[in-house]
Length: 149
Image (cartoon, rainbow, N blue to C red):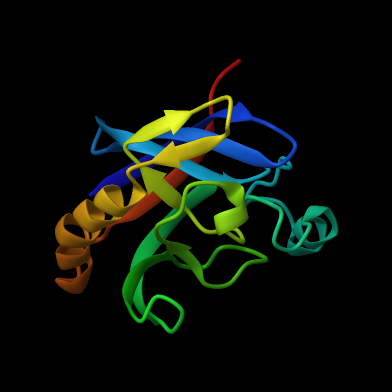
């Protein structure tokens, strides 16, 4: 299974993108501000550019895993081995104020408010349909790219 986030709406505070699963439209994702980070950059460069709690994770391809989240009190999907970041979860939320680098999926988006909607439903679907594949040991990847200008 392959999830692909294409970042396409940018503001100084937030980034929105379109999420597909195996090439099929799924919904949208809200993140912190995209500051041009890429997973191929040296770690020192990422750490120099990154503003903790205010910077979207680097573009690149990551494997999904499952971990217990004390703040959410349940198992959640997370992106593994993100350079310069730890505990990048996929969880509910609507705006960049609800995240510190995490992925906030939704099935609606508002490009003026830089937010996503119906996040609870989107996360529930991902947990019901993606988590079993991860638990079964299937390779599930999450790719982040920027839309071509």
